[in-house]
Amino acid sequence: MLALEIAFWTCAALIVWTQVGYALALALAARLLGGRPPGRPETPRDLPPLSLIIAAHDEQQVISTKVANALALDYPRELLEVIVACDGCTDGTAVRARQAGADLVLELPRGGKIRAQDAAVERARGELVAFSDANALWEAGAARELVAAFAEPSVGYACGQVRFVQAASGAEASNQEGVYWRYELAVRGLESRLSSITAGNGAIYATRRDSYVVVDPIMGHDLSLPFNMVKRGLRAVYVPEARASERMVPSLTGEFARKRRMMSHTWPILLRGGMLSPRGYTPGYALMIFSHRVLRYCSPGLHVIALAANIALVALGAGALYTVTLVLQLALLLAAMAAGVVRVRVLQLARYYVLTTASPAAGLWDWLRHGTSAAWEAAEGTR
Image 1 (cartoon, rainbow, N blue to C red):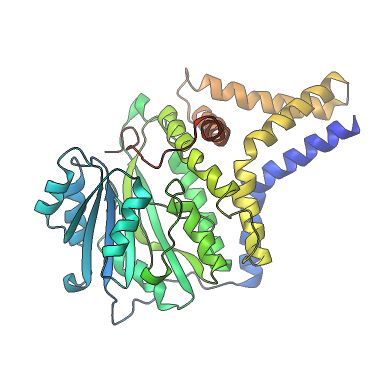
Image 2: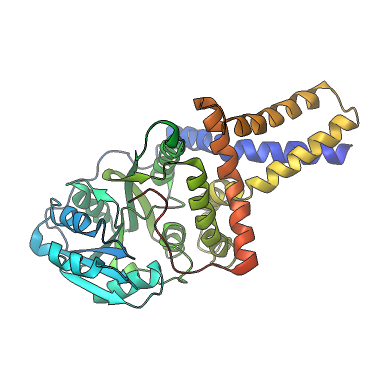
């Protein structure tokens, strides 16, 4: 019985730590240690040449709007280069990108988003290279805010703030990603203030051209670039003033499918891409990677072990406390199931938590069963 109790409480403690405790610890550390001030960076007077790269696969619906958005940025036109890297497009993406005014349009064979970005970086003229998705729209001042982070020589990577816009309403708008994302961005801000972030996002980020890291095509930049910058002695920072927006996947089932696909790319980074190797990490950053990434991705297994141990402890008559903890776990699962029938916010949040917690396990299964393709498709309802 002791082994079951140890298993249960260890898993429960790790789940609480990665979901809540870690964020509270960061907030306390930032308060006690100060860290770098969270104020807005000062935009340098002499702006560097910037190449904005948009990787696109069959994006004729949105590419004209995206290029127009890029050209409308509050950044000197003579210093801004807009590159559209067409990854095996079979529609009118390339034609529309040129018509919209892109400075360079690359028509590439299908090799995946990463290889399209690699090809664009090779042709880029900018001192800094920024990246965005075809469906992400930047605010006018976003480029200046992002570039300002590189006034600090130690910064090698900077990502901005992406805001998710609900594309549907009523019964179709069941995705609760916005709630999680606001929490995630708050944690990211604390990580940036104390050290470096552990992950970025694909909608708005930049790096120095001479610091750009070529990674395996199945390993996306969002997760692989920040920790690789740290290993090279550079910082990866979050710039909340650099804002972009994109449409959210409307349904929870669609969000689960998106995260499942993302996690099939995450596990190779975790297990083969060097994230688990502490070489080049400070002790504090290693703890961040363990707390925010490793434990988060292992949460499905922790939940299963906690539930199994709890059931066994109740069956063995271990005490009333274990009956209470079992009821709480089963209530979460029942609430997630009920959310498919009853459209109540608290039930939708429970369903969101269960599905997104299960997504790392589903992504791992997909990767182990048939590998991960470098190619990508637009998520449901985001265009």
